[in-house]
Structure formats: C-alpha cells, structure tokens
Image (tube, rainbow, N blue to C red; front, top):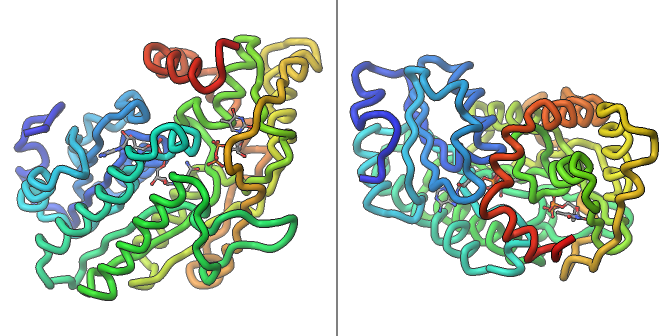
Length: 366
Ligand code: NAD
Ligand code: TYD
C-alpha cells in the first residue's frame, strides 16, 4: 500500500472541517508548512505524502508526528494508483503541492529525475485531483508551490513580476516552469481550482545542507573549505522560510483562483556577502577568533549556466493579501545559525551516508 507510520485507519475515525493533502511535507519548506497547518488548524486533517528521497527526513517532523490531525504516507506523487486511493480514502478538499526535486546542481548531473517528479509527478497529481473532484469544485483548492527561477536571470536591475515571461535556464527551473504550465492548463481547460506562487530563495532551519547557507554553516563548523562558485557575485533574494509559510497560508485561503503570486524578501545579497556574514556569525557563536572562517573561503569553478540575479516584486501579494515579510535578514540569519549549531545531531544525521558521495562528486575531495 505504500503506507507507513500510522495505521491506514488513522484520521478516519472522526469528521474533519477540512482534509488537506500536502506533498513533499518531509522536505525543508514542506515540513514548516505541515507543522504550521497541524498546529494552527486542529480541525483540518493533514495528510503528508512524501517519497522520502535523500531530501525528505521524518526527523523534521518529530514534534508533530503524534498529533491526531496528522498522517504520514510514504509514496511517490507519480504513483497514480496510490493517489487515487488516497483521494478516495480521505476525500481531500485541498492540496498544497511542494514535492519536487529542488537542487539546481543535481539537475545538472541528473535532469531526468527532475522531469519525472516535477513534470510527470505534478501532472499525475493534477490528474488525480481532477478525477477525484470530477467537476464538483466548490470549496476545493489545488495550490502549486513554485520558484522565481522560472523567470530566468536578471541583469543588475529590474524585478520579476507575475507578467515576466518564462525563461528557465537550468533543468530544475525548466521542469518547474513546465509544471507551472500544466497547472494553468488544468485551470483553463478543466476549470480545476488552482492557485500558484513563485517564491525566491528560502533559508532557515531544516534546509538540506546541499544548499548554500546550511552547507556553509556545516563546513565552517568542521573547518572545511567554503566553496563559492565563480566570483561569488551572483545575487539571490533571500526569504526566511517562516515568511514563505505565512504567504502560503494567505494565498491558500484568500488567493484568487487561477492566479499567480510572486513571493520575495526584498533582501538581495551577493553570494560572497552571504558567506562572509555566515563566517562572522559562526565564528562569534563558536568563540573562534574573528576572521578564522573567512580563511576557508575557496573560489571554485562556476555552476554551468549560472543565473546572475533573481529579485522579486511581491507587490501583488502585499497589496491584495496584506502579506509582508516579518523577519529581517539579520535576525533570520542569526536565528538560522543558532539553529544549525544547536542541532548538530540533525546536521550529522543528514550528512552521513549518501551525502558524502554527493559531496565528493560535486566538490571533489576537498
Ligand atoms: P526539498 O528538496 O527540501 O524537499 C522536497 C521534498 O519532496 C522531500 O521531502 C522529498 O522527499 C519529496 N519528494 C521528492 N520527490 C518526490 C516524489 N516523486 N514524490 C513524493 N515526494 C517527493 O525542497 P524544498 O526546498 O523544501 O522545496 C519545496 C518546494 O518549494 C519545491 O517545489 C520547490 O521547487 C519550491 N521552492 C523552493 C524554494 C527554496 O528556496 N528552497 C524556493 C521557491 C520554491
Ligand atoms: P543554492 O542554495 O543552490 O540555490 P539556487 O541555486 O536555487 O539559487 O545556491 C544559491 C547561490 O549560491 C547560487 O548562486 C549558487 C551559489 N552556491 C555557491 O556559490 N556554492 C555552493 O556550494 C552552492 C551550493 C551554491
């Protein structure tokens, strides 16, 4: 059946106000969304469907796994039979779709996995919702979580708006762009009640240490080289993950059907400045001499097709739904550094095993 953890009857012994399917809930952003929904909406049954790839980790959800309104199902969003069974069993009235292959560097070495999950998997999930809801769309909602990377790369100036033409340039962003197109196609063709958002780079607790910020914190801790691609001048717009979750809640409940919302932090930083900030914060926190970690910075070969700059204009979301980031970049980074240094066991457990082979392949034996 592909079911694990709780018995198949879990969550079915009572009536719920809502029954929500969250995909990819054992990953970085998904685990924050699951925790938020389980705690904030005790009358909603939350079913987390996750394949537990290298990026999915049930440790991320230990604190909510025994809540009565939470069920975990191990399975693949590409498994049509499983999706049909789940829609039948739980009669979902909402879907928040986060499951994806999410790392650009992995998409460069293994693009097919990205096409399977991000494109085929999303299409399968749309199809399952369409079949299950069968035109009875009142009160239903399918929310697709996407990325600003679908818009391509900016020069020194300008921002991505919801009108910016798609121009994906990595296999990751091409697969996400494709999934966005399918979501809109199901809205226009079948009337499926969808909503989408495209968010900038997230950071915060539970992010897998293949991504820049947790990788650098982990390496400083172990006095390993800090790999900066190219000259470190690429710019990303960083948003604390809790602010993304707040936006997801607002859009899920109040976003207009068929609409897309850009989400961003107004927090553009060059990679080299991010790395230097982390060096300072971690040295301070570990009581090491100032400047020690900066000595670990190592400029390495640039990522193939490396997008120069991403920056989001989030004014639609701000004006329509009153959302604004609550966390400043400085406070969010300090909180994040504290979390990783206080949760060494989590970091060690996710970097044992397969991570070592990934790291060696990606960065050589540095
Ligand atoms: P992540 O890699 O940390 O987590 C992805 C989760 O999806 C994992 O738990 C994994 O096990 C699961 N998964 C992968 N393939 C699956 C499959 N075939 N079936 C079921 N589950 C599967 O990713 P994340 O950073 O939390 O990103 C979540 C979503 O948000 C993605 O759709 C991503 O494109 C989007 N997004 C991420 C960012 C960011 O900065 N991290 C920014 C904007 C949008
Ligand atoms: P990443 O966290 O992979 O997010 P994305 O590629 O989705 O923006 O990378 C953020 C930036 O940091 C990106 O410009 C690539 C750069 N980077 C490095 O310089 N070194 C690294 O080891 C990694 C993982 C990323």
